[in-house]
Image (cartoon, rainbow, N blue to C red; front, side, top):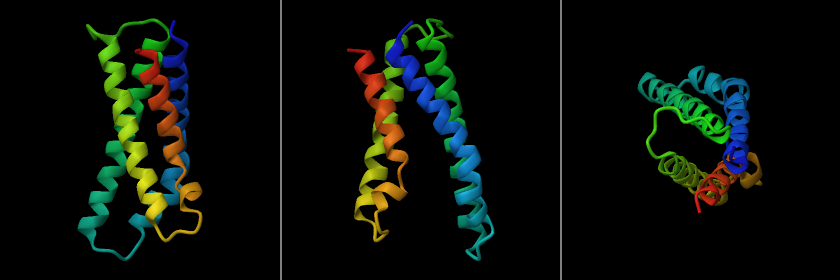
Length: 128
């Protein structure tokens, strides 16, 4: 059992639950109900669910590897690193967008970067 990977899996699973529960209500539905053109609406709808798929798959992978099970991967350390680098990239992008936005206290209102940083740190330090 790898507690760092397991912790990252738990955080990823909680973020996934939040994505579906809060993200659908607070982000996806308002975008879909907005008056913007149908093409950007469908692109945003697709992007939301691309992230849904990625978050669900990586949560499952991290939880299973963290508990000591090997799914189908020959090198779980590389899989964990790839997931860690992905979430690190998400964190950087969201933090930069938040800090450069005109949203008052944008870093706190666009807070998902905190989850991404934690997942990245736990996964990447677990493979050192």
